[in-house]
Structures are given as C-alpha cells and as structure tokens.
Length: 86
Image (cartoon, rainbow, N blue to C red; front, side, top):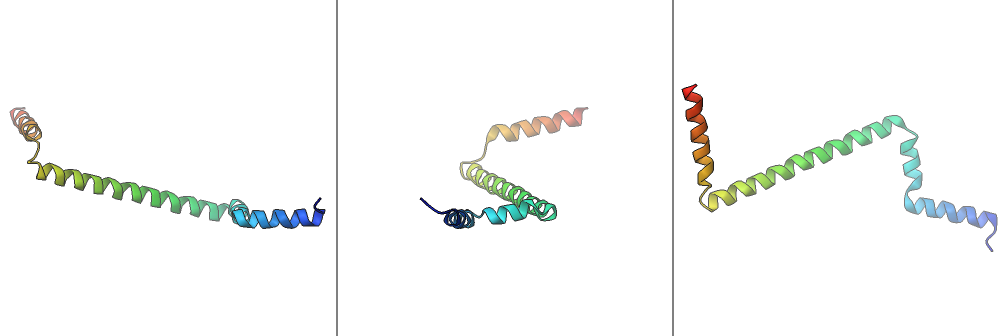
C-alpha cells in the first residue's frame, strides 16, 4: 500500500499531466477567464465566417461551371418587374 506522501506525489503528478493546475489558475482569475472566453469566441466566429465564405465561393464556382441556375435569373427578373409596376 502507498504511503500518504506517495499518494500526494502521485496526485500532483497526475494533475500536472492533465493540466488541472492551469485550469484552476484560469478559473481563479476572472479577468483572464473573460479574455480567454472573448478570444475563443472571436476565433470561433471568424472561423465560421471564413468557412461559410469558402463554401459559398465553392458553391458559386460550381453553379458557374454547371451553366448557372436558370430559374433564379427568371425569379430575380420577375421581382424587378413587379417592383417597377408598383
């Protein structure tokens, strides 16, 4: 059986391995936690916007390559004509 001192050392080693010490430090500092949340939120938002832009560009290129979508052009023309009438 392990002595209490060995158990404490084992727990310290395990917590250091898991990064618990850094987590506790961040949770005890509200200012650091706020900045960390702001930073991660900003990066997630920027990643979402960039990802959506890439998908839309690829979709646009695919539509152009396939010859366009005729019913969209017709729909836009009808909306334009309806707006001129009113």
